[in-house]
Image (cartoon, rainbow, N blue to C red):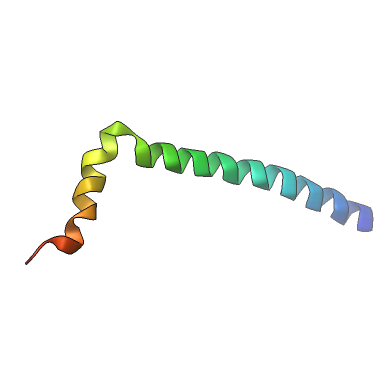
Amino acid sequence: MNETYTAVAGFAQTWGLLYFVILFAIVVAYALWPKNRKSFDDAAQIPLRED
């Protein structure tokens, strides 16, 4: 059983890290994509608007 746990833990660490790195890269690319700039600039100004 210990060998199975070690194998599963190694798999999860390796592929989990890869999964989160790819997910992070996708989120950063989405946030920095030029097409999305206007919507993010508008959202950033919401707290400064007066009702």
